Image (cartoon, rainbow, N blue to C red; front, side):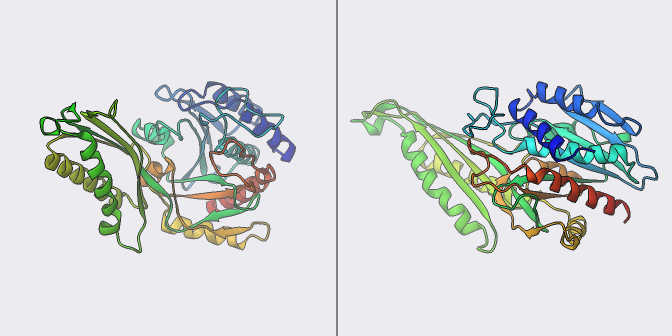
Length: 381
């Protein structure tokens, strides 16, 4: 079993070799290296040709009634680390600024426990690439990975959270993370001289109308008791002050707590964009890309059982955590397979994705203990 010192050593090594989505080759190799030190009696390791940096490990149960999946994401962010830690990233411009090094280390700690003490049910550990971009969870599911001998009945996974005490467990019954959609809108008009607007079709005017009209989608289409966000963070148009622009591009994000709401809001964005284009005499191209970033909707029954277990443990600090508007591609797996996502507190003053994020490593052993205990308890149900 991995003690606190071993967990810290693993986490620090992973922290130094962050890699971007679908390029996690060093990370993949190191995960294999660590897992090779565990007893192999009940382990089966699977590589995925369709997702080469992914790694799956099956632990054969002694009397399985179900197969429980546990997911840990392994990619990093294009962020230049600014922590001053002696084990800072050695890859320029890339850092584990979202704490996926913590996620992997906790998963390895849990796996090491069950490699030495055979579980009752089957366990499948999914070390998943491409969470931050390129939706690795969807890629794996759509490739049929979780079928046949690798079928998963229920899935669990965590995300670290800086504003919770180290080792605390946070969860809610409902949506924990919003689903997200990338918004890309191109208005195409007819350029011309600023002095002769009658001979042109101004893409800037169309874009301005769209930006204004979109603000009413949430306020007039979403109930005040529900939650959704549309943010348009980028607008580019024109080349010089006295030329009417023939093209304007708007980029933004849509976030909502249910897939039904997201689909409705996607259609409203299309309708508004097409209406503005027609009224302004422009053409419009609307690209709404959700990929695998569905809402993380926790299964009611499984999450009720998870919360009840954590609340009953004297050595676990459980905190009820309402849903937030950040995205997570674990939502796609939970859309297909029932399960629960939860927070692991890491006690830091910096936000996720911050260049200064420095999780408290005390969370590692506490997280391993809490999750191992829950999975053991779940197998007795």
